[in-house]
Length: 399
Ligand SMILES: [Zn+2]
Ligand SMILES: [Zn+2]
Image (tube, rainbow, N blue to C red; front, top):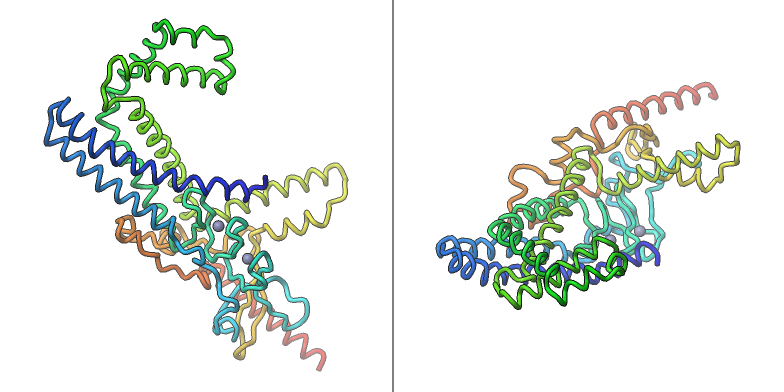
């Protein structure tokens, strides 16, 4: 099964599973843990009521943020068939498909994959092989919400990642100690109960349930199920333990994604740029290896190396309207790195961006013609001027 087919299959299951989890956790926290466990067992009715209210508000907010991402229209961020006038009339700097093949050859990049059929492909647009369309400001395709993450929704995505771990932690907090105690009880029971003991004695238990870890997971699980029957504590049943563990696992995923996405954004990159950079480095290594063995380097490899490099070609207007030069950016320069503060602001991470009602709105990101870093712009214009002067000098010689 190829990568995007696997993604497609996973994303049919993941979003409904997550929504079910949110609903299930909301029900247990609001109607069981709050009023019964904290309110009656621990005898803190006020705290129990506060906990229930917090559970409803926080899990409700997470669900809304998640639904906003899940229900983004599948047509979001698809470029128009042709570029806007400013680019067609060559009034601004814009990315072109490559070096000119003949004088005056200025072509914007176009995509011919799947349904794109020659659609305009602005700078920082990528074709998503799962969605089979091009998207501007493409960051990555996310199986968790079955859609592409694009620049205007990065603040929404980060808000969801930012709030999930503390909410899961606060909701689990009153359960951590009693659940730990009960885990030991369950383990002890499974080791001593005459029928359950057999599991530990069975030598295949080391191998069959996914190795030694599986042996202990299943051992604990059967102990816990027996404990739920012998010494029932409804609010501390095995299912509640599963709820807390899933919450913990989701929190870890959120934290890892939050940190890595944030660092990339500070660096002026989107997730896709990082992926391409890694592929580029890998390809360079392969080519070096071939080189050291004096083996020929296939042209397809060289072609991919060029495509994956961060070097891009731009049309730079210079002289009379509609005229200009095609200049490339230097291979080791990130064309969209404006410094960490501006990089954050450019994708909408400014002020109180993480307030849920602000995050719900698409951030205003100029995705149709991304602003180039100031230094890069200056260099491109200088370069265009030199090229033009050079051309004029050559022209004079021929006169
Ligand atoms: Zn495309
Ligand atoms: Zn996609």
